[in-house]
Amino acid sequence: MNDNNTKKSGLPRHICIIMDGNGRWASKRFMPRQLGHKAGMDRVIDIVEYSSNLGIEYLSLYAFSTENWKRPAEEVNALMELLVVYIRNQLNSLKKNNVKIHIMGDKSALPNIARREIERSIKETENNTGMVLNLGINYGGRDEIIKACKELYRQVQNENMDIEKIDENMFSNYLYTANQPDPDLLIRPGSEQRLSNFMIYQTAYTELYFTDVLWPDFGKTELDEAIDEYRKRKRRFGGL
Ligand code: IPE
Ligand code: IPE
Ligand code: MG
Image 1 (cartoon, rainbow, N blue to C red):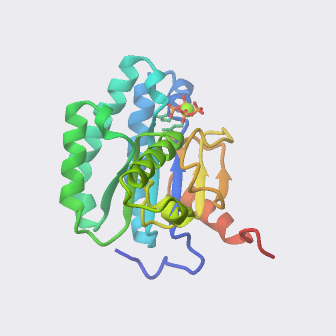
Image 2 (image 1 turned 90 degrees about the vertical axis):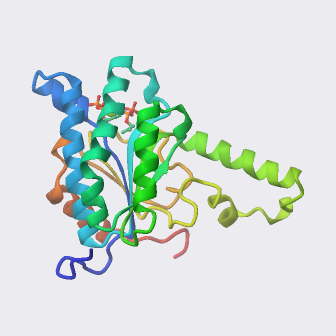
């Protein structure tokens, strides 16, 4: 649903967010890290709804990286449980807002219950025509590129494709974001200034925005600030 009062020109079509800082948010409050993730999930709910009302076409959220499996099992399990809770609690409201769920990442390694809920959410929102919500779950940019290379190699090997026809456009259609525009704006809360393996192919010309605000404190005002900053940027894409 687009709110024409808030929809202004120069809005990024595709925003991606590295949702970082949940653990530090909790530690600052002498709380277990899990409560930081719970508070982070509440921001996901707000930001998804707000972005969709603003008229953002694609929102990509980094929820769990291929490297996050290195964390203690207790934390990994808590994150997977939160994912299930998020889908169970939010699916109706996502449907009401015409949001279409898309997953970036290798679902095969996820616990059965998480995979089932994800598949259900994809199925139940597949005909929605509003904002596309890309959830990065067990997502890694390098993993994604290697997967694309393997698939292309298979096609060439089966003589379904001429290797000389592979170009940037075709390659990007073998990524999880096939047929989507590259992100215009990448936001990383939580003070770190790195990509941590997030959308490394797609962000070649994305505007980067870093903030010290921790993800559980990142609300509508902070998203507005990031979008205002984006509007001031001069994008040249290598030209003049
Ligand atoms: C981001 O918060 C959430 C995930 C990586 C799943 P962190 O858990 O990385 O929080 P910090 O960086 O330790 O504060
Ligand atoms: C990036 O945060 C991953 C997600 C937000 C899902 P991390 O906390 O895992 O990143 P590093 O380890 O600080 O680079
Ligand atoms: Mg972190």
